[in-house]
Image 1: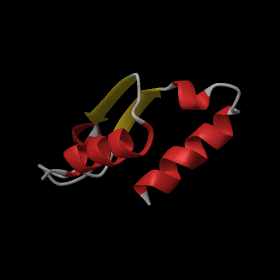
Image 2: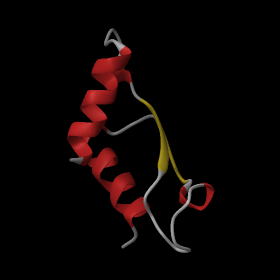
Image 3: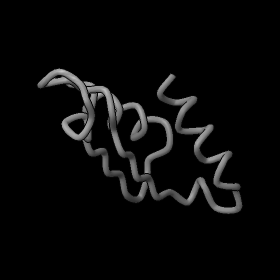
Length: 65
């Protein structure tokens, strides 16, 4: 299972998002070919309603820790 797939699975299990997009942006950074080190994650969920942006980031980072 790729790191991208692991990220998707962890987030889906934790919050059942309405929309989830995980994009591997590693190729845009100075890393070896085939690296999985930089990702852009977009999550839309009713769980985030009324929660400040920083708390949303902290929640996702906690899920992925």
